[in-house]
Image 1: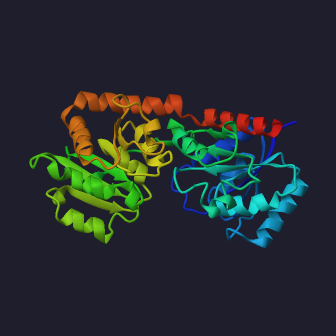
Image 2: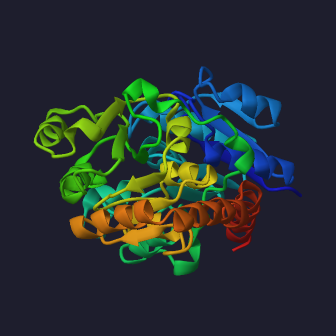
Image 3: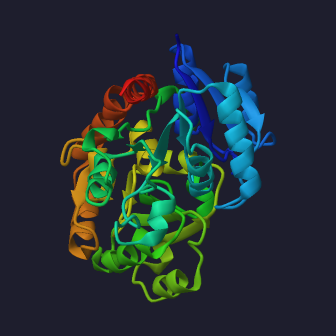
Length: 364
């Protein structure tokens, strides 16, 4: 008999690129798994789910603890005879775990970043430390290892499955950067992130003060919040001010990074497996990442990217200048980065590993 899986996830955010975790669910269907998804019917990914054989139920909890949601999920679990339920966010996790009380279904949560889960935090026992939880699938080994320090689950039940990708998703032409007044022949370093302090953009802006005054290095900042007051003030006082370009939130972020020479994500803490880094690598753009969360797991340092210490301004400067000064290394590293995504982070492999994980946990 095939595995029967209920998934509860929110897909209402704007679909401006492929959702890797969604493609894993679709991949599991092709492997014979019976997948039913609870999500909002208006979600833009729903037509693709339906086309690929994922059953969709128009429902998602609106609150972290909601009696009507608990009843609705419990009714589905009892009537659907599911082997397991896979939960992708805190609203889904809390309500579904209470709904599963006393039922034989296995319960698994998804964890996408390090930090903020501690055994001494009472609120954590409503989600990833909930006693009704049977397992946790993590997006990176760093996330897994972080949870091992706090969860009471056997270590074998907390496992890593990387979000798989396909190079076929990244075939769009590189964007024209002239709209940002970036001249032809400029060496462009792209940083794509929704600005939060932990993303380390302020550290990056301070690090580039030491660049040669006559260099052709330009910095492109893409993402929500990149035009905030704090960053704007740092840009104003920077010797590089006329070579720092703020794009803000964009739907064409992958095409923008494809037009850059280097990508950088200088996070200081709490990363998962950053999609922006993967997108850059898939386009053959060598990444510079800080060693926090799963970022460093994406690259082989010195071969398919460069890894720096979180918050280390000198290492940020040196990494960028190293690639600026060595075009042969730049091209070689970009090729290796693309090759690594194709060989080590494939969506079909991720789907198979996810299927195997659930089959093992159901048998346990």
